[in-house]
Image (tube, rainbow, N blue to C red; front, side, top):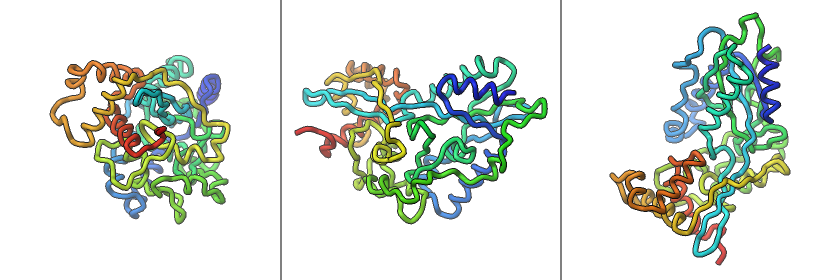
Length: 336
């Protein structure tokens, strides 16, 4: 059975795997739209962050198919930078490093070693957190981050459509009810725990409902090229992008959230160049001059750009420079 092959392949690589029919994809799309219509999701956040999913539209998979979602372990990455003559360890939360490349790498490996040419497969562009929670692969925490037993929140979700899974009449999952009819799984311990709510620096995690106010989440603004809101406050430790405040205090992550070297380190000149690019972004300076063009004139920026390329994060260099400048300017984690 294809399910057994996929689960054996995933287990051998330390991944967690879930499979179900494609009905759950439409369920996730419908629930997202219902939440938008009910005003549970702020309109600006929805337009900026939740309208790019393709779901099953334009899929190259023909014939019967199923959804496969994998939880791939992803550590916190440590990236040292040199500031004022001192080395400072900045952090990159799970999933950012080689995010897009991980989808492609896992797909290629799955095709070669699990599907072995017997089945088609393609990347699924859908809200994977909701999808995986419906499938029982993960559970939502109060911070709306997903948790996998044994992994905590240190994982990246990768979704795929696998074709021809039922040529022999098999169903990939015999669980009842079907995933499309299940509620999104939530962590039981969140009922009594308020650790993340108290740790959130911007009040995005709410007492009155499980769905956070995403438009208040510092992570959202740390990823955006728009100016940082005056009310936004980064929380320690110093992250180049995103925020770890809620994940670090979460009891579900105790002993599970790991760190690993990024393999990249910035010299003082490279750090200054990255901060300069971020300052230009925030102050709307350098408009009309591409990052590549600026890198041609700035050797340190070119070197930093090449290092970010190794992390699969070149598109984020300016926002990360802005975040670093913003955090240092507010004295976050800076020794006096």
